[in-house]
Length: 192
Image 1: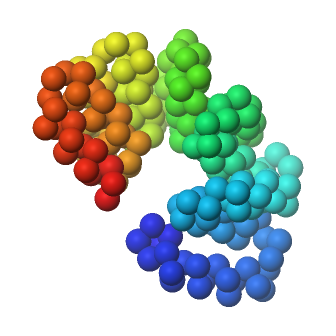
Image 2: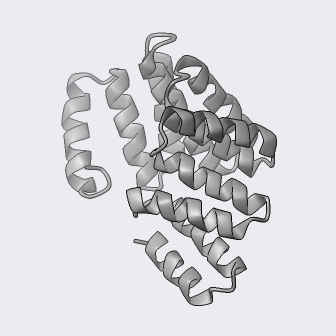
């Protein structure tokens, strides 16, 4: 709802959080809303509150740490993002999206061997996880394999065409392959 109807989502969060202001699930949902609205400082604070409010060692805490790690990654704080995402993976090792996000952060930090191991593990858990496929595409880009990157990114975008990061990475792959029009089309889709 936060993506498609942000005003309705905000109204629901305001009403629901008034009844349970410290509920970890609601703090996490509110943090996600703020992140999607580009309110990074508020999102980071709410993710931290959600991680602190969740019972230690639970799936709720892993989800809050994953959200916090993603927000830190988007801010460019790769060291703290990787540390936070590693904590989420340690709490929920069978969650492919958490592994994929850590592997993506590893790729961005140029820890390519760690990234490969992470993507292999994530895809072994869920071969159709679009975040894992897209991240593997980014890894292929970092390794100079634009054709392999395009293949992985197109697979991911068949599953989730609105995944903006994959659209941006696909644009880079298309550009490297000399497909300027396709690159510009992909960038246009990333903005939707």
